[in-house]
Length: 473
Figure 1 (cartoon, one colour):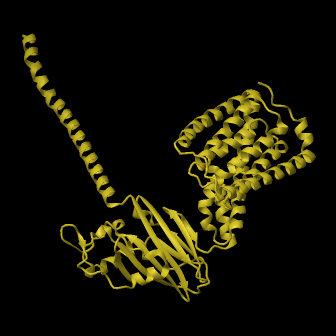
Figure 2 (cartoon, rainbow, N blue to C red):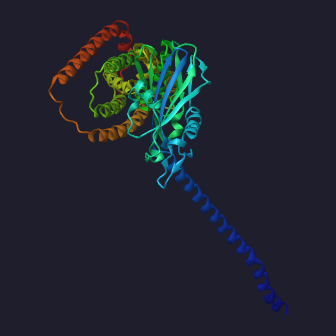
Figure 3 (tube, rainbow, N blue to C red):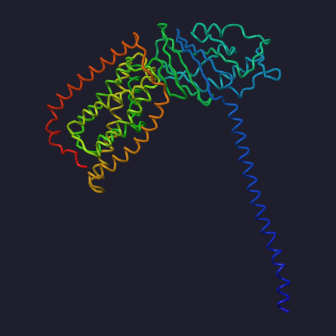
């Protein structure tokens, strides 16, 4: 009887558990549905955002101080102002020019002047007046000069009979700021990167003398001095050189290869000095135009930089004569100098009238960066070789790791270099001028090499001769 009761009760227990299991399954399905829903909303909003924000935006600006007024002419593609509801007519969305002024003023106040700030000295110019706004056709070329751009902004507005899809228009604006003097030093903090995925801003500063100083940058460059003092230019380029060393993995690995075999400061001095002097020679010469204009030259230099790291690493592994190390470093330093120049050439626009000061300051920043790397690496190597691994084995292991990374860079950069059309230059006047410049550069390098050899031979010969030869394999 008990057995029969058990059999009767068993289905009852199963029916009690079944709803719980069904609830679990339904909850799991609900969570999966919510997850799919959230992902759908996310991707749809992302796609909508991508449609609203253009991939590339070019902003053109003139800045001119006159008397007690700073005049700013701005041109921004209306495609970058997608969140502004401009007055439109018809299905294509043609702009109604006669009704657009209030919306254009709002766009200038909110989207443009909210993201670009001007300074007189250290004082932010907070008061301004938007004098005029105008929509120009996409093919308009009036921003070739300050006078033409000003005349265009002050000209009569387009007629409503002109059919212009609003996203194809160009918003031009004239803004004035009260200033103390036209002789003051002005700066701009542009944060217009918000207008597009890639925002390129061109600012042409019109000096009181009438000369123009152009600036071109991508994204948000921070505070840019339009007419920097020597101190402002110097500090900017010191920081630039310092950051370039710390960001340049290949330059750091090259320094590491120089330091790994020996950590004595007196022995390192000739090597580091040779590298510094060599890259200074080619860095200076490149700013005077002694650089081929061929597109394949930068990839060639990048490939040779990787080769220099591989060579120095293998030299550490198989052995070298320490008294000759600085000569090899000098040769590779000439190559690294061209690498530095690619960054510096693009940044010389921020030097104003202090080109030589900026160049020397960049070099100072590079040396500060090298000193910081050496101050960190040398003590770590001393501790490593003293307490964890035998010196010779440690040199081989570290050099092999560096060579492994540099070898991959070399292969990748070589592939990039081979994608360019490298042909023999045309024999003409420009070729002979370039040949003469390279000849002068070679003569300078030989003279400097000879002077350094005499200097090191006089003051460092005992140290280099008594240093242990790294010839052990």
